Image (cartoon, rainbow, N blue to C red; front, side, top):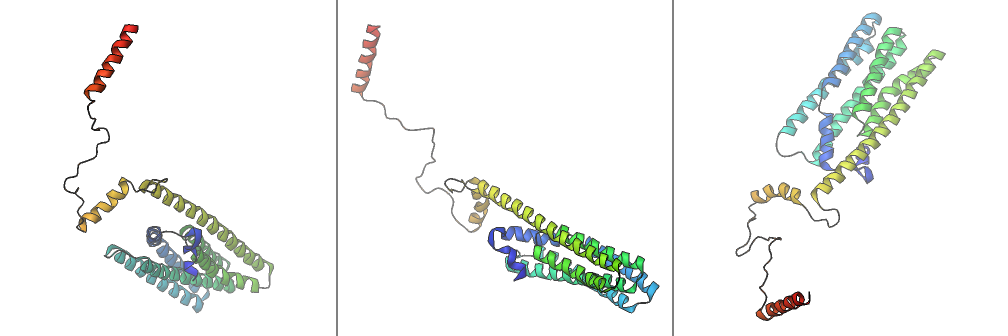
Length: 278
């Protein structure tokens, strides 16, 4: 499936890192609120100036989608704070719900910008297209670790406006359509570069974590693994005390047997002979 494509191969990430990425996506509500507020403002102005009811309907649809997305973010935070710990499958479910909301928002904003181009009001068109460009910049910044979702968002927001621009029979609209396509291509490239850089950092982080837990030559675990696993072992009732009759190992203290009398006498004779020769 599209959303699982990056989870296989050399770019795969661990469950802990995946949960961290999903938590980061749900970490702020400000972009959703600002996008809805901007669309409501521009939609109200455009509807007042042109009387277009389709623009009014798209404005209401954008606000409703934003409210649903905010409710989804609240629900995820509430689930994250409640036991048990969020598993990989459930995290993927929440991720798909979030990405579906972003794709719907992108499509509504794209149709909103396309409709403003059709209406022919220059200032309203600039405002609507500006919202689309701002949303696309946010997608590049926040969804770099989910490249398929970022590409879907960028395509959904750019395709309606680009198609409508190329359908207009004048050179100005053709230039606008080309400008939108160039922006999308540049955004694709930024997502690719950001994704590769992020995966390299995550891989390096995992390597350092592995070095901190075990010896790289022998693979034997060190004290950090014991510090991590000891509370679990104690809570499970495992007896970690030494067995009866055992003694702690002391590498600096070794039992040395005293030499016998014959060896001591021979050593004394050799010492005396050496002193006489000198």
